[in-house]
Image (cartoon, rainbow, N blue to C red; front, side, top):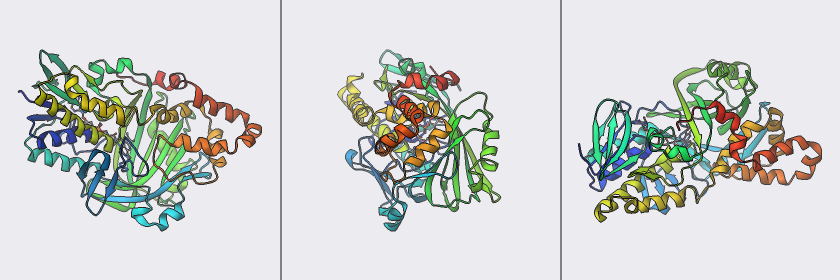
Length: 454
Ligand SMILES: Cc1cc2nc3c(=O)[nH]c(=O)nc-3n(C[C@H](O)[C@H](O)[C@H](O)COP(=O)(O)OP(=O)(O)OC[C@H]3O[C@@H](n4cnc5c(N)ncnc54)[C@H](O)[C@@H]3O)c2cc1C
């Protein structure tokens, strides 16, 4: 079968690329390994990422009246008429379960109401993808489900895509949108140039019955009961499939892979015996279970190889976000259309995508600011997290931007530097190590434990 464009993977990047390709009249096919792209098995906090700052080169927001995700800098809107739930500020709990740090002043934000005061909304990824799939179908793009892509190879002017189930597809361009553990990034050699920092493993539960003291986004730093590994437990509003359950929460427990750890036993410990067990005191009802295993890499330099354009999580560090992935899918499909019109079936033909990606990802955000959290998980001790959070006694800026978190905390700590120097020099030394040591060195323990798809 021959097409203008093949899209591999039906997540936010792939379905957006397919919907766009159909809209602008490309003969395209979307290949997905699941039975339906909108069936979500992999955890995602599905917070709209993000409204609080400039992010991924845009100043995006969710307009709930118009039922649209709006990307003003990219002049793009995406329909979203599914369930959603706002939440206020970000509350960080120390491992002792008592000490807290806040990003944003909760009382102030709450008084502003759910539109002006919210930190963000949680929404349904399944609903979003389903509407992109429907748009894709209306626009005449073929969708091939239950097809696991195993290779994409350039043969002459075409890229030949093969699936494990025996189908072959041909097109001058392919958009690889096969997610964070991308097989195509591995096959085409992109991961050889990237630095590997570890594998993250998380368990997610949609549950009823948590007794939380607040409707903030809660992030708890937890130390594993088995080997003292740093982990995070987070609570978000329950929004899944077509439902917002106001009495429910999505709870996620995750951390860097350590092959010795029994993660289910750790979940049980967290809920029954840890300092956070107080949030699970009542009988909880678990409605859905999800999980994820994701490799953490440095970003690729150029998201293109042999007429395959890489979009979404495939080539960034851990997560390009749902919003960023959709933007990438949209931009990549337009770039392919331009290349076909210009009859430039090569890298130069799709330069608009490569320039956009560089401007919106590596030039807009330093991945090390994000990945430092993994360095801190490798270096800091339990008492360091308790101390750090205790020292930040004023609310930090009202922000969900993971790239700014370390900067905000760094500024707050700098104000207390004289005290910290005398009070806790060992903590200071380890913090300096997190900040100044190359990530490849700091993350060596987690990289050794992980499963790189190099
Ligand atoms: C714990 C966690 C929390 C997160 N929280 C947020 C959040 O709050 N907000 C936010 O915006 N983002 C969040 N993210 C990130 C977000 O989930 C991703 O950035 C986003 O889903 C990436 O979209 P994608 O299309 O690139 O990849 P994916 O969503 O991973 O989609 C890839 C698709 O490709 C398919 N596929 C893979 N391999 C093949 C193959 N060989 N053949 C055929 N099909 C294949 C998969 O089945 C899947 O459908 C979170 C991620 C995690 C893990």
